[in-house]
Image (tube, rainbow, N blue to C red; front, side, top):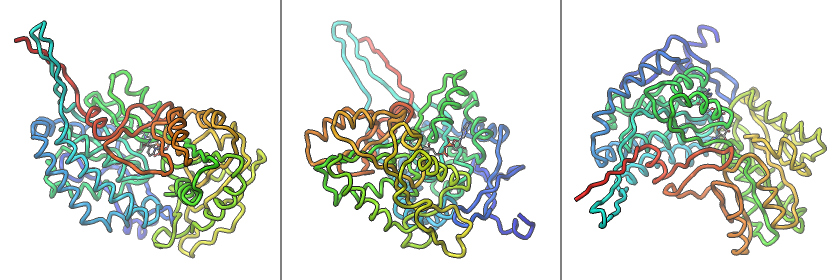
Length: 489
Ligand code: NAD
């Protein structure tokens, strides 16, 4: 950017020990809907991470000795402050990520608010275990204590939503944190830092270090004074984090990618199934780890399903994310758009049929968005199970529809990928719904719905989709260290 241009840029600073601190170098951050650089993100490394970890360590003794109800009040206050600024946060998230303003307003920011409220409440209701051994004259009980400085690393698809899903339980349990949001979507985390003091979060309890994964992220993962890492992102990065943290025996929570199937039996209520499956395929541009990307439809209804599904997908309007009538915004980056488009090209080269979207329908964009990273919702049919489009996580607005004959067959095919995050089953036969749900290798199974969540219950994936679970009890267990104490009387 030119000098004149750069003066208009938003420049973020790290938040360490309760203070904003500038960095010696910066990374450009793009507005995906225009293709312009609009923000500069600190390019932090070892030095900045060192300072943040020190601040977090210093804050730990006081914060960890507060009562859960004191911490709960602070979390509730922070939730109120974010909610008060909901519109500003939603605008920022949409501009930074490319998602529609509607999605940011109705999903991302309300959920970030709810994450703080949820853990502010749930932290008050945990009980520990106790057993008796009368013959030995003993009672045993467990006690739980915060672990220390937690390293929190989050991705670009649901920036504030996923970051607060980690910060809230970590600090509710009495840990202090060093968070590293994605370098592509750092703005809302920085905005949240501005509210921490007012909420009563003491300096050093929440530190945010901005920067690239290979530099700032790795420095955090390798830091000897950070005993636990909670990571949400790709399976490839998780492998690297596992290797780098192994010498320190760190506790890891890994929430990774998915290749989520939807299974549609011939007795499904298509009037519910079709709009929900269009949404589960294309919401947030398909950039949600839980998005459907393989739709198995029973042969008897396959043709009808395809026809109605494509017609519904075509109703989804792609364009300027600030336009409230738009359903599909911009993808996160130029590179990611190319990657997603290449999957469609590969499918075509393999002989699959692209029924709508990329390369088939015209994409018309407003003048200001011509250089944005847009793509139409794309439906692919007649694609083989072995194809990369059916095996790899595409993470864009692309979904594959294939036919199946029997229950036995579809379970095998649905399980035939390396991932195991989420699945949906559509059928009005309650016995079948239970049977299939039990046999799917998937951390979450939704039947006759999608993305209906109770935060109390475990969230996470099997196989290459992750290790560990998040939720009221699961996050509490991850962010605390348990001890068994035996008393002889
Ligand atoms: P990514 O793995 O590239 O990056 C995630 C985060 O890790 C970023 O903050 C990045 O800077 C950091 N990082 C990258 N390399 C690192 C390293 N060597 N050491 C430490 N940190 C490093 O993932 P992404 O592209 O930002 O996000 C998309 C992925 O996230 C998809 O695979 C998606 O399925 C997954 N995801 C999973 C869930 C879930 O809950 N299971 C939720 C959302 C997204």
